[in-house]
Amino acid sequence: MKNIVVLVSGGGTNLQALIDAQESGRINGGRITCVISAKPDAYALERAKKHGIPSRVISRKEYDDVAAYSKAILDALNEEKADLVVYAGFMTILDEQVVNSYPYRMMNVHPALIPSFCGKGYYGLRVHEEVLKKGVRITGATVHFVTEVCDGGPIILQKAVEVQSGDTPGILQKRVMEQAEWKILPQAVSLFCEDKLEVRDGIVYIKN
Ligand code: GAR
Image 1 (cartoon, protein in one colour):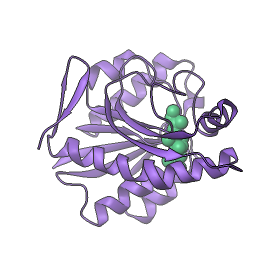
Image 2: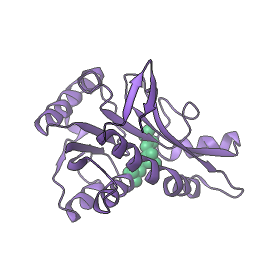
Image 3: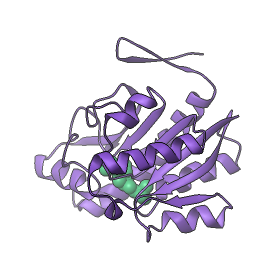
Image 4: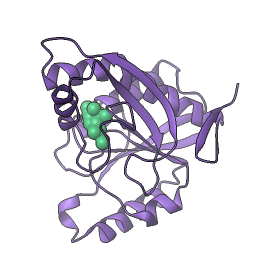
């Protein structure tokens, strides 16, 4: 059984999707052993508590810089003996000391079809605002491995979602979550825990 540690900052609907998948037997070969929140008041912490999952708060505000915060997160991941680290709405940047310690063992869900609408400054609702400003007809979500390049790591799964006339950023965000994020994140986590993901030359191959 692989130890899955989930990093959160906010509402935690993606964490909930992972918990639901786990409870209905859709995460094979792993279990969520710890939730780490960057914010003490994140609702994600309530979700973990309700389901008996241990949690920790490592508040970004209590650290002077990215390096000090990254060290604290790295120490916690090592203590938790994490096999897989999942960024589920985790909005805080960590430096290369963390990424290099968990190569191709950290994944992130992003609310757009990478390489569109991604990178520094594209997070949460802002992504959907930019999608609507540009007028694209199709958006979606991506689960990818985390590397030192923001939103630039190898792509594991993607799912497309239609933009509809009359969409607001909030309406679009909800559709992208329901139709894409909450589906592909548990799928990607399960594939990892079943040892079905292989990365060669920056490309993810899914084994049968
Ligand atoms: C989700 O849409 C997630 O994809 C996005 O923030 C939201 C968090 O919601 N993450 C990013 O934008 C990361 N760049 P949640 O807390 O309800 O899972």
